[in-house]
Length: 270
Length: 270
Image 1 (tube, chains in turn cyan, green):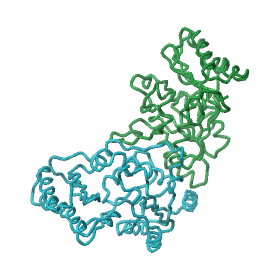
Image 2: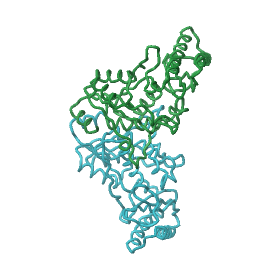
Image 3: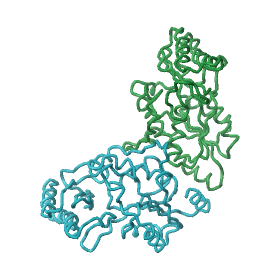
């Protein structure tokens, strides 16, 4: 992969990069489409990164379907699919970790200790291997996108990170590889995540400014669904992820909810 | 600097890089000379990195003499001197850290907590900015060189790290920017570091294999100098830095000694 990229660069071709864990959905495909439009070469990585899963999490059962993923990538005109195996990425003597302090222990980081260290580390490696001009990430994983953009900036990586809008199902559920875990009843209840975010947007439009009030209303709505257990509902500053008391322009409203045994996240910027 | 490097690379010029904290001495110059011989372009960075100094250490009084350093670099045919300031390297919102676990808490790391995290972080940044083909480091800072080589490998950085021999004064004292701190009597005593290493080499040549015995003899020799306080004398595996019981080929014999208020390190590979 590194040799391919070096060759592309020596021919002055720009490289657009979409890092994924496979199990591709319409959200990933929308990133590939922008990458295709904006670059000479499009690289997609498919790597289920063990470092970002906790011991009780779904690393082993995370959906994997290479054949389907390859087909989808080719259909989008992807030039290179990079799918290293775990031992190539983390040989036995592997020792280096990348952390983005202050952003990694909030929101999802509170419920998934070590998760964002795993994300930052693998993405630093992927960026160095692929050497993209632009990397494309989805807004659905807002905290992840923020951390990756921060690490690329902090470590002076010669690339740009673009964060693209969340792609949703018709009922508003954000596209996620984990949606396939949902049982039929859970799938119905899952649309409450986006309904809660839409309710927040509506309340703010009506003039409500007190974050505690908005969060209370969101929680009440989510709690009407009996398959749902809230992990967090938060209104934070988009850059620092610090909680806000009063709504301000560009605030991030984010939530994580367990539906049955499936953990889903979603967010909007208001 | 990044723009310069991109331009060099687009012209297929190879870049040799010598990262320094300035206060250049014959050791640094020897690195520049190899870099000059092996590359189209030679870049030297001069940056006293606050992240790698502890609160009680010598960040503020660390010797700085840009004019002299510039003159020396130019004499060695250096093409670019990169001297960022602290606020450029670590803006107010800086958050990212690089750690090389398992190698950073031993030897010097035990006496300088956080030191190697600061080293790994700044070097990751410098490597991304300068984009060298080869980086040149001195064997005198054996642990630092090992950690930097490991992080470059682990993070898949597209460069090679070369570790060059320690340059010494006529009495064996390893070149160090900190040698200028030594008072006349301390300077005389300081040659005991290399004498202890030479004694170890001699004992091993005579057939001694028991590390504890060799270390005891080294400590006894150093303790004859009343300005010297030993921090550590260690015989370790060159790759893992784990202590050895029995000498083996390629063992690293390393020591750190405080002479008055000046901390000096040295090492040999036997």
